Image (tube, rainbow, N blue to C red; front, top):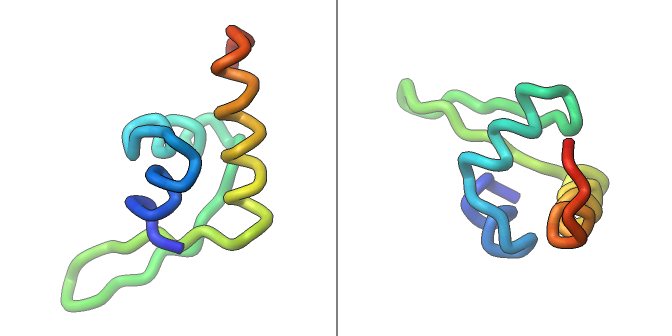
Length: 62
């Protein structure tokens, strides 16, 4: 699943997902196609994003 699809699925912004990746909470596989970088997220990572999103909506901080 690409970052845009993951963001829509988990009701997060792409910027938030990038932040969680920078903080080391999630990982992605980066694919380069025609010089453009695409981030792909597996089911486990999307599940983690759903958990993070749920906790953030409950006012937990990173």
